[in-house]
Length: 364
Picture 1 (cartoon, helix red, strand yellow):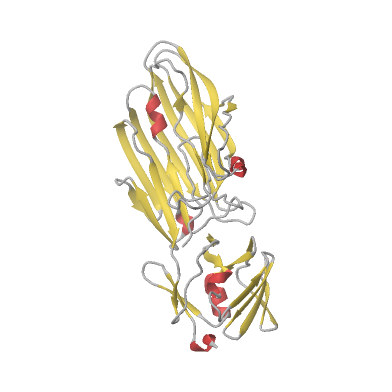
Picture 2 (cartoon, helix red, strand yellow):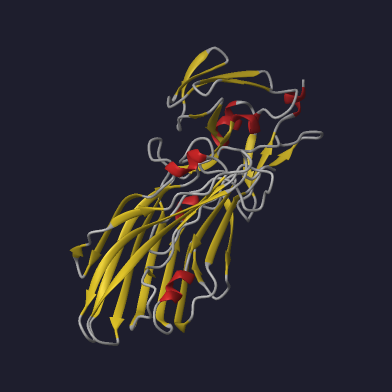
């Protein structure tokens, strides 16, 4: 199984999309991440982070938006000393194996201080030169704002933004393995400990089609909504959530899955998979160019088109419930519906893993 894409979302700042898995050293890899609001001044500060909260929501997949992530963060900062001006940074960190990943930044970033729009300046550092084409590069940037504190004053900082999952060759496309992260450690730049933090990550839209693991332990889980609550702590560890598509079990002697399962995602609660999964050996033929596809299996021929519910099965016109979606030289197709049209059946075990069963006549 090939893992290529991850997502890393930072707390309250420049959140992120990325491509490439940290678990696959031979894969193309890029990573963008953000973190808690960071004190940019070098001098010691009397300002403490009293509390922070963040809501991350994985949105429903859309043809134009990809699989978007929406983030809303809130920070309360208290000045325990005399009046002061503090430079607050919203960090953006990018590790990329190709320059194109620089375009994978958050969208619609907005920030407020006590409900008033903050004036921020985007500052980007020039990355070092590469020694090799595929060498990973680190790029850093900040959204920087000056915030005034009266003596003893507490101020509220709010950030909202959106981003898209994925970003390898075609940004916005999720893959079989994805990683969401919440960076806490930049919050350690403020005075003392962080009073409290609540982190909520809602992955409800992946349905039951992905195995989800999260760390560190200590979270509460309700369905696919994960919540961490911490009090009076020094942030030394970040939160990460990994969700991996449940590979179908194929019930047919001598058959096997293709090495690369991408694309795979959930569209309107329907599991969409690569057309190669429903025609995965020499008894099935797939001819696709990303716009149109011809699937041959078990004596059936299914003609499909990107974005169209109109299809042709064995020479007759039919209307599909879910339209295929073009992906590079492939089509993402609804697993259950496509397998059924080609003469097979799909069932799910108690964990939600799909089981594809083909009749013996498909072995001709």
